Length: 172
Image (cartoon, rainbow, N blue to C red; front, top):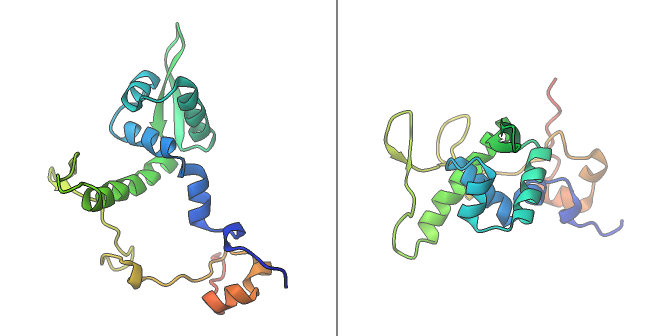
């Protein structure tokens, strides 16, 4: 059987990194999360080249992470709003903030605090089990093949060694 690389297999992490792994994309989304939704403030806050920002915004709009909405006619100007897909990605940004505050603060503490609008308290991201609500740690989860994993790869010896015969059927 030919040698196969895990990097080429369908993987949610690989697909996400392909789109969001560019540092500028994550920083653009951070700015929008913090309320800078227009080109000029995003560009100024990040110190990013106009051409680079234009490219990143176009990709995020094309991938439906952002919605481009006109707010001025002459000259034409646009603001960038998170779509449902973008709002969903904000959970990842919130988790990145929590991780960075814990491990990369150099002992100085969090540079930004997050306050939950619902209860008014300071908060942080926490990954919990969607079923029982308990916090999830790396040792608490097991990877299994899902319905989107290609059948032709499921029988590969490396896949069998890693995942065994676990495979969920597509739900109706």
